[in-house]
Image (cartoon, rainbow, N blue to C red; front, side):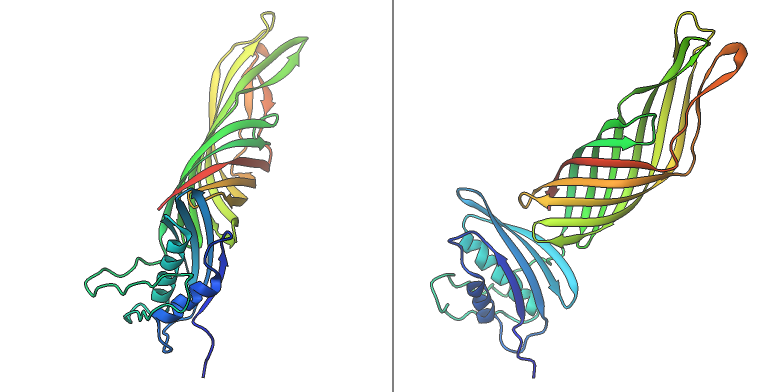
Length: 302
C-alpha cells in the first residue's frame, strides 16, 4: 500500500509566514486518504507592499506541469489559498473535507458551496511584454547596438516570443586613390522564437530556436573629389537563430532577462557603391555566423 503523502511541497516564504508543514497539514485536512493524484509543488512567496503578498506556484500533477500566481493581503491568506489549490489538484472531483485546524498557523478554509465554480487549472497562460538593449557582432562591419521590443506567451513549459530590433546606423568605407567612399548602413529585423522553459526557484534558463528576417538599407557617400555616383540600395534575407535565454523573477509580474545567441544567415548579400568608371566597389558582406546578446526586462500578465 502506498503511504506516501499526496503532496510534496517546497515552500519558500519570509519569516513570519506559515510554515510548509502548516500548509501541508491544511491540505491533508481537506482531502481523505483515497487520493486521486500525486502533486509536486514549489511555492515562492514575496511581499510586494505593506498589505500585498504574492505567491508563484509551480505544480506537477502526475507529470503534467502547471504554473499560476496568486495575490492576497497577507501571507496567511496566501497559505490558505495555496493549500486549497493543492488539495483540489490532488482530487478535483471530490468535495474537500475541512475539519477544524489543528494549530493556529492557518485558519480553516470553509468548504465551497456546491454551486461554486471549480478552482482554475494551474496551467494558466501568461502574456509577456519585453524591452531590451541589444548588441550584434557580425551582421554589419563592427559591433552594433540596438533596441529590441517584443511580446510573447508562456504555456506551462513552453515560451513563444516575437520581437523586432532597430540597429544603430554605421558606416562601411573604402579608400580609392586617396578618396574615401562608402555607405551608411542601417538594419532592422523581426523574428520569432520558441523556448523550452527550465525553471529553478526564481531563475529560468531556456534553450531557444527561432527564425528572423533582416532588412538593411545602404546610402552611399563620398568625398567631394571622388569619382562617385551616390545611390541607395536595400537588402533583405532570412536567418536561423540559436539562443539561450535566462530570466530572474523579481516579482510575480516582473523579471530581468538576458539572451545570448548565434545567427546563421540564409543569404549573405554584398553591400557596394558605384564608383562610376571603375564599376562597383565592394564594402561589406554579413559574416557566416553573427553573435547577438540582449539585456532587459519583461512584464507578465495573467
